[in-house]
Amino acid sequence: MTRVIGLISGTSVDGIDAAMVEITGTESDLQVDWIAGTTYPYPEPLRQQILAVCAGDPVSMAEFADLDDAIAQTFAHAALTLQGDNSVDLIGSHGQTVYHRPPQTKQLGYSLQLGRGEVIAKLTGIPTITNFRAGDIAAGGQGAPLVPKVDLYLLGDRHHYQCVQNIGGIGNVAFIPPQQNSPSTGSHSPQMLGWDTGPGNSLIDLAVQYLTNGEANYDRDGAWAAKGVPCQPLLAHWLQHPFFHEPPPKSTGRELFGWDYFRDCLSDAEPYSLTPEDLLATLTQLTVEAIAINYRSFLPVPPSRVLLCGGGSRNSYLKQRLQTRLQEIYGQSVAILTTDEVGMNADFKEAIAFAVLAYWRQEEIPGNLPECTGAKVPALLGEIHYPIL
Ligand SMILES: Nc1ncnc2c1ncn2[C@@H]1O[C@H](COP(=O)(O)OP(=O)(O)OP(=O)(O)O)[C@@H](O)[C@H]1O
Ligand SMILES: CC(=O)N[C@H]1[C@@H]2OC[C@@H](O2)[C@@H](O)[C@@H]1O[C@H](C)C(=O)O
Image (cartoon, rainbow, N blue to C red; front, side, top):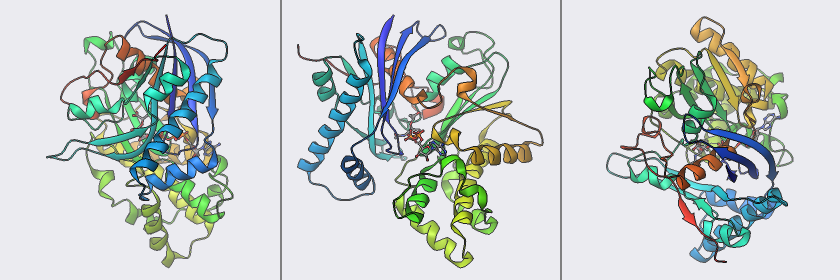
């Protein structure tokens, strides 16, 4: 048994999710037992600095190095807070993505996560694995999404064609066909798939911040959007964005669906004189339609159930709109649950996944699925940093 802490701050930049778990087995016999989890908020000035860098604000290399270390220190504190009196064997830290560029025909991808492992290992005294995306990118992959391989082994089901749909800042899906035999035999058909579906909560959050002058950060339970009506012509226009129609493998981030895109949305919306409620309803529906278009265009069969995770799984209005839209496109009801309902914590699933990815790195088991990231080969993911005792 290996006790591992997994750490991640996602594209919402809302704080560090930390999960402590005990892991045994390897792939088809992988077992992860939950011990504890916590969300450790960034100090507000640090959060603002991260958002500014993500939005393209210029920084000197010296400021950049300080930012890297400030993030690493916050991650280390999150790990130490969660660790308490427990002994921990390993930390898997995703870090904070500040830039992501998918690969092009003649150019490898580039994905930068801050919060260097040397500092986390030094401050915690625990071996720390970081920089998980580089190994997949070196193999020609997108570097994302990486969580689907963990979903396969922890959420694969004998009967269902499942979609595990994360709705964080960005949305991503893992499509998992029924696992009749051991997944590692590759005997399942059709194949496992996974890719980024587009905006999750990123545009909804930006709209709430804009509409409240920064007083609020998100639309709790979708209550505000639920009072509005989606503007169909605006949606039709936004849905022409090439990302929604690009076949997988594909990945994205705040570079595409961040402030600049939101400002474009606002100017597109001007002629319609939308109320704040209508604007939020339309942006929420964009997330729903992005998921629906991706499923209809790229899944080989309709999912028999969708397992939601990430903060968007708490947005009951979004969930209900997604239910309606999937029923419309498939002509039959598709069960929508949260991963909590099948025993996997929906808020900490990504943190748990990076604990597993670190464990796989230590056991020398590849962490990526080429069918999801587009990498040429399965690759060992992550760099190991040992504390100097
Ligand atoms: N009760 C709720 N109602 C509506 N939305 C919610 C609720 N709770 C969380 N959210 C949304 O979830 C977001 C955070 O989700 P999450 O932590 O999964 O994102 P992330 O991990 O940062 O993103 P990513 O998965 O893209 O890296 C918040 O910014 C908010 O928009
Ligand atoms: C570059 C980056 O941080 N991408 C994240 C982001 O957040 C959601 C989506 O975009 C996903 O593909 C990815 O994260 C998860 C943890 C993944 O790799 O599976």
